[in-house]
Image (cartoon, rainbow, N blue to C red; front, side, top):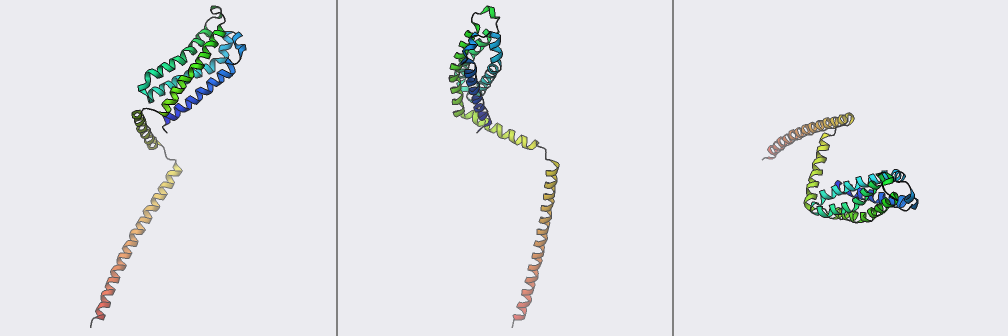
Length: 204
């Protein structure tokens, strides 16, 4: 499997775990509806920022692997990320400007979690059915990068010394084989001469 597809799968799993965490730790806790916007944001900021960042990364990989589906990918991404952006905007406004700010923000976050399924399903579909032409290009790219890496890897001195020793041993063995071949050839010549001498004695 291509590294790009593995990366996409990993990011999808990570996004799902983040959304599960937000659902169980924030949305399921009704006390946050009465919390101040500042407190709610401080509790959710890390996860929300991670969700946005991961969703953007997933979108970019999807567009790479399935460019012909760009409109539907962008639409699913927007449907998911827009309520998250509204959630952030509400919480970061001065609290006196928005009544029940935390409750309103959480409603948008619930909508984002609901909308996330369409985006995640679209991403999983790209994993299963990436563009064939893009797939071939990425395969060639990975092969090229692997060869480039191997060619640039420095060999440790101990390994280099062993390789040199092995190389010299092979050269010595090769010389011995050549010498042995010469000895065999000489022996064959001597046997031919001996056969000739025997043939002479056998003649009447």
